[in-house]
Length: 496
Image 1 (cartoon, helix red, strand yellow):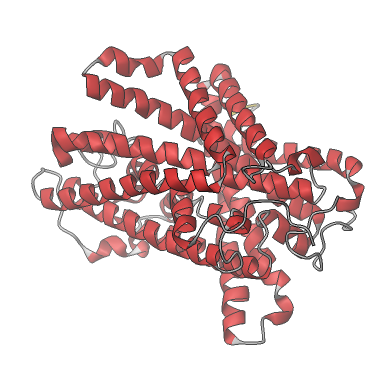
Image 2: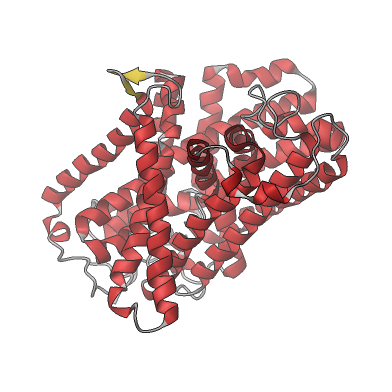
C-alpha cells in the first residue's frame, strides 16, 4: 500500500486542536455574530450558542468514529463515497470545497478591513482607515493576504503549526481579558443587566422562526473544527488524535462563546439602542463598538489586533481542508490526477494549495467588482453548504457502521444514534434555510426573476458542482463506476 505522500507525524494532539480552533476563528465569529444573534433571540443568545453546539458535537462524534476506522485526508468525501457511493460522495466533497473557497475569500476581506482599521487607530489617521473603502487598495491587500496564507500552507504543517500557536494564543488571551473586564463593568452602563439562568433556556425564545434564525448563526460560528480531521494523515496517531482534537476544539469554542456572550450581556445588555448588542448600527462588528467602553482606550486596541489575528489565522488554516480534500479526490481519480502531486520537500499538496489560493483570489476579485450585494449573498449561501456536507457525513457514519450498531451500547450511541440525530438537525436547518432563501428579502435583498439572490447562488453553486461531476464522469469513468474507492479500499491508498 502506498500513501498519498503527505508528511506524517507533523502534528500532535495540541497542534491539531489549535488548527481546529484557528479555522473556526472564534474572535472574528463573535464580533460579527454576537449582535445578529442577540437581535434574533434577545437574552437567550447564550442558550442558542448551546443549541448550535449540540448538532456540531453530535456530528463530531461521527467524524471521530469514521476517522478511527478510515484516517484519510479526504474525510467527508472519502467516507461518504464508501457509505453511499461515488456520486453522493463527490457532491459531498464539492460542498466542502466550495464552502471553504467562500470562507477563504470572506476571511481575506475581513482581515484587510481590520488591517486598515487598526492602522487608522494606531496612527490616529482617518484617511488611513478610509483606505479600505478604496476598492483597488482593498483588493490588492486581500490578494496579498491570500498569497501569504497560501505560501505558509504550501510550506507544510510544521510552518502552519508554529504560526497558529501564536495567533490562537493571542486570540484566547485577549478574549479572556475582554470577558474579565466586561464582568467588572457589569452595572456601569445604563443597559447593564444582572445574570439570569433564563439566559440558558432555549425554550424561552419568543418564536420558532427567531430560534431557527439564531441557530443558523450559531452553527456557522462552530464551522471549521473539522480542519483537524483533514490533517489526519499528517498527525501523530492518525486514527485517534484528530478525533480527540476535534472534541477538545469544540469544548474550547463553546466555553469561549458562552463566557463572552454572558459577560457582554451583563455589561451592555442585548437591546437595540446605545451599547446594546442588538443595536443595528454596531451589530455587525460588536467588538469595534465595545473595545473602548469595556476595555478602555489603551487595552481596547487589543481587540482590533485579536480580530485581525483571528481572521488571518483562520485564512491560513482554512487552506488545509480544501487542499487535502482536492488531493484525495484527485488521488482517487474523482478529479484530474495533476492535483494529487505532493511537494517532494514540504510533503504538502502543493499544486492543490496554490490552485485553491488562485481560485480564492479570483473569486473575491470578481465578486467585489461585479457587485457588493453578490458578495454578501454568496456569504449568506455558505450556511447551505455547511449543513449539506456535515449532515451527509453524519448519515454516512450510521450507514457505514450499520452492521456494528448492535454490538454494544457504545457503538449504538456513537456510531448510530448521535450521528443520525446530528445529521437530522442539520438537514432540518438546511431545509429551513433553503425555504427562507427563496424570499428576496433574505440577505442583501436583491432578486433574480423574483427569486432571492441567496437561493439562486446557493443552489447554483451546488448545480455547478453537479455539472462538473458529470464532466468528470466522462473523464474518470472507473471512479464513478465504483471501481476505485469502495468500502473495501484500504485507507490512504493511491493508484498510479
